[in-house]
Every structure is written in C-alpha cells, then in structure tokens.
Length: 348
Ligand SMILES: *Cc1c(COP(=O)(O)O)cnc(C)c1O
Image (cartoon, rainbow, N blue to C red):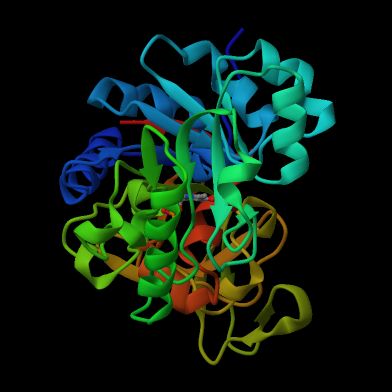
C-alpha cells in the first residue's frame, strides 16, 4: 500500500543545516558547538536534524522536556550528550533515571530531588537576570549544588540579539559564578550570543535558530543559509471577475479580472493570518501575492501572470525568514516552530 502523500510539504536542505552548524562552530572558536533541537527541531523534525548534525560532528544536544528526549533517545551513543532544559519534575524521575539524557536542574527543589535519588550526572541552569528558568545568581549557588555531579553550568542571555548593556551585565554575573562553582564546562551563548564575540563562548555554545536558517544578528547575514522551503499543492484554479471578492469576510475585492490559485495551506499549518494580503508564493523567481484572508487549511494567490499553473502543481511559499517575519509580524522562531504536523518533510 502506498503511504499517504500530503498536499503540503517542507523541502529541507540538509547541506545548508550542516553548513550553518559549521559556521556557528567556527564562530564559537575553541568552544564546542551544540544544537538546540527542542520543539521538534524548531519544526523541522528533531530526529532528522540530530542525525545530520551528529554526522557533521556535533556532540551536544538540547531539548526542553522528557517527551522530546524520548523521541531522540534511540540516537544516543557514547560521546553524544543530550540535556533536558526544563530539568526534572517528580513525574519525570523514572524516565530521567533510566535515560542517558541529563536534566538541566533549574530549581532548588529539582536539585534536591536529583540528589536524593542519587541521579548522577546533571547540568545546572543559573538565572543571571532573565528571570525565566534557573537558580538565582544572587543566592549561594555553590552551596545549593554542593555534591552534584555537574557536567555543564549554564545560563541564558535575554537580549543577545540586541546591542544592550544587559549583555555584558549577564556576562559579568556568569563569570563571577564561574569563580564560585566549579564544573567541567560552562555555557552561555545561543545563536545570537555566538555573534556577540569570543567573551561569550566559554566551553560550549547552544545555537538553535541560526541552524535552521534564522538570522539572529547582522553578523550572520551572508553566512547563514536558508534550510526550510514550504511548498503547497494547487487544489483549484479559478477566475475572479472584477467586483468579485475572495475568502472569509470578503477582505479582498477584485478591481480587475484575476486568475487565482487556491492552495492546500493555512493557519493550521503555521501560515498564520498575519500573512493575509501580505504573503506570497514564488514562481520562477516572481512573487505572486496572497489575496484576502488565509483560512485554516487554504489560501488564495494571484496567478494571473502564470497561465500554465494547474491543479496538482507544487508552489513555493515565500518563506525567507527575515522577509516573512516583517510581512507577517511573526518572529523567525514562530515561523519555524509553527510548521505543523501536516507537512511531509523531505530532506534533499
Ligand atoms: C532555545 C534555547 C537556546 C537556543 O536559542 P536560539 O536563540 O534559538 O539560538 C539555547 N539555550 C537555551 C537555554 C534555550 O532555551
């Protein structure tokens, strides 16, 4: 039996993924360069991303929770490290103790839980001012983590994608911690943090966004290659006569006749309503605008300039992350992680 072929797909460029990791690794200097593969590899598919980056030499991976860890656990082998950024809840303990992955302990209660269970190797997250996850940098972190078998001590930058004095402030706090808590490795930088320069690299970097083609900083422009190309199939071609409107709430009314293609893609696929009247598809290098509102599973584009396009044809959705982010009002992160389960994922 032939398996189902979805009417929408992601073309994923494995060479670009690896090339992005290599550039980030070079930018990381003597620090090892890991990979954040949480949220199903930012929507691309965590297993396929991890497999490719392991082949390229990446050794350190990060997911958010133990559900995500279970998905990639079969790939783990000696020398490959997987850290679970949200640490361990009581509900996670059985899995965590049996797993080769390590929790990134974030709270005093998590530390106590892990220590009491004799959990072994772990990482520790210290908050240096973002006030999201981690032990408070102002507390006696050394005393809190005493006796733990720490592999990596981490913190996370709040504003690495901006020039702001808050970056050096967090850096100073992290350097002070390094003087108090001894660990084999220290890690601070995400994608944008890598671009802040060598002071921020420490022993291990943790890029996510830039691996997948996101541009975290001007310094990455021209070096980071796009990885994701969404494509949708043409479901119906129709003619709009001047005066006709199209889509929910008739937000677009034709001033002239148009040829329209209706495609199998909508906001349930992460192509959110912000693209209504603002998105485009690209055919032979030409940009064809989205007309009217994006529906849950469908959208319409103006194909007046393309008389040959027909039912069943595949069209490239304009998804340059920088441009699409400006057009839609979504962040580059949202554009990636919103890519849902209905796409077939094809790696070139
Ligand atoms: C998501 C995440 C990263 C990766 O960040 P990017 O901005 O995508 O490079 C690194 N570290 C932590 C703790 C994260 O949560």
